[in-house]
Image (cartoon, rainbow, N blue to C red; front, side, top):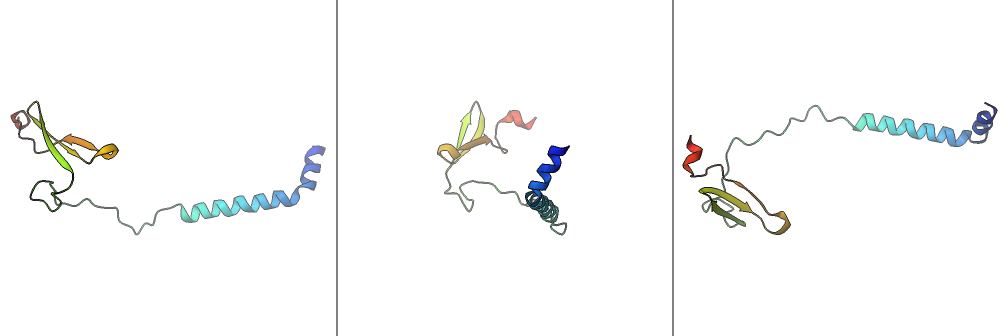
Length: 96
């Protein structure tokens, strides 16, 4: 107990600065941490966009491949390349 009193006596300024710093940081977190309730969440567009030869961005880097009767689209190049099964695949197994 005596050691603690001596520590506080020697370091009172540092303790007060640290306390005020923690108070200000906590207050700043509460004031800036909440989202603005007036902002409405983003609503996805009701218009469906398709990428094909007649679309606005038809010259973008994409290819359509057939694999075992299903159509797949591959977009991009290098490390950013990705692919997916096409939603409008013409394979008759999807019309069941």
